[in-house]
Length: 236
Image (tube, rainbow, N blue to C red):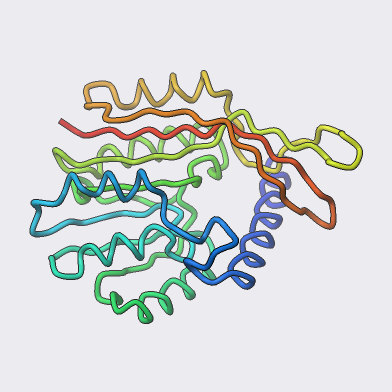
């Protein structure tokens, strides 16, 4: 039953993302692909003095954040390893990396991020933007967080943006639907998990924004509401 649910959700997500990737070019106005996440790029400044920066982007998509990060590394050593479950996204990411002249700074790996083994003590900067809520269970979520922490070098940074308390409402009927998301934690529980995971780290930033989006799913106009938590921590 759980497998069937996850399979259905991921098929809907695949259709949504592939439509977006086809209809909008990277950094083109009109979608969430138009620019990188400000916090992700601002946090990159912690590594301004580094000659080499190794970055992991979990759930990279077509490179909304990894392409600008790689551009910042163009005259330094280091790479951005981009992990995503969709081969079509990674294929487009490689095309974009060629277009932007940073193919030498980009590597890709096809995997469910819940199943990806992060090498120990390898990355200076790990980014996970709207991807951790797509693992298949709370157990997988905690395991990924542990792997992220163990894969981060001393003084390295984890930058997480996670959606919680998701609601989906049919705009025509007002009916509240079961959200098509693998892991829909309450915001309070999400805070508990992150604060427990990152005990002993320097918490550089936490912000919570209540967001509302209009999306289309199988011809239905849906109002999507979410608590969007940004959590940035530095390893001591």
